Image (tube, rainbow, N blue to C red; front, side, top):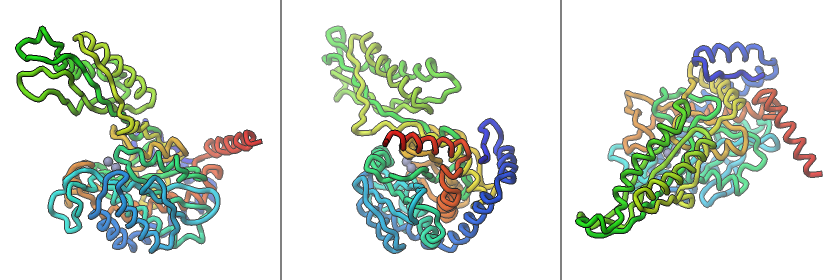
Length: 454
Ligand SMILES: [Zn+2]
Ligand SMILES: [Zn+2]
């Protein structure tokens, strides 16, 4: 049995349990695990200048979703340098391939940047004005390329295939979903992703079983009345008063209709109406996002926002409609770590980075399109700490002051490589890498698929 993390217990106690479980694991599995983890961290440390060089090169050329042409070319050049073949998907995405045969495992990095103006300071500052790698995706690419370098050097020993997935458009474009729909991860039975995290100590890793990041859905509500002279409100139907009231009323959905124990958040972040001081406008547009930790909760809130927009506006004589802007900002489901995959990743992280370097995290409310990978195959998403107060690497993701402690990158590369090597060494999900229950489920699914083909 794979070690289990109980989310109700403290990390230290969970760690003790894990150690006890590891000590009782079958000998071949332990030997394979130890051999797999061996040497990756020192090899990554030796490759640190290369990894950091890649990151700096990518940091200087940030591009927005589905426009990552220079970025994609730079990644392709590095794969060429490593002698790794690749295919293109989803406009600017790439999938490199190391090893051969089954099982296959996905290591994923996202490649897009944000419309943020980077401050002066770094010598490798963005050369694309108004664009910045403020979510650390340059670090993600460099870690995956670092892992690719380590894996390529061990290719003869790999017991299967590693798919190096570089996906575009994480920041709202659901590039991961498009990659999957185009067949980028066909044949893979598991996926792992890393995200740098400024509130986790640099070089440590934090993860959890189950939901680790929220789902997100954007909305645009139009409250329509009938505009006219601001001095004669009785002759108009004022959408501003209705919309102002609706902004407050929407807050009651989370505070009054959501269990205090089930996290959700709804924020109106944009209000647009009117052109001058003395004319009541015809309409008001409210834009925002809502987030929750389960799909069911998301769908409940979606229905209630629609109902409240219509009925609340009607109470003021207005018409309220919701556009979910799915063409502009697709729905991201909650990101749910598979229990077996999370336990496995915890064990690998402890072996590669050190037992005291793995922490349990609470779920967080931002969304991530790695959720689409986690919906497709059993997956684990891990936070790699970059918090370093001496360096000033303390600012939030998406902040223009975001700063990445590069000393964490070789550790992330070693961890990513370790996840792949060990997953394959253990025979993948069916071989028991994620525990006996997952192996049985995988075997059952394979048998059912076989029957349906007959
Ligand atoms: Zn981001
Ligand atoms: Zn990100």
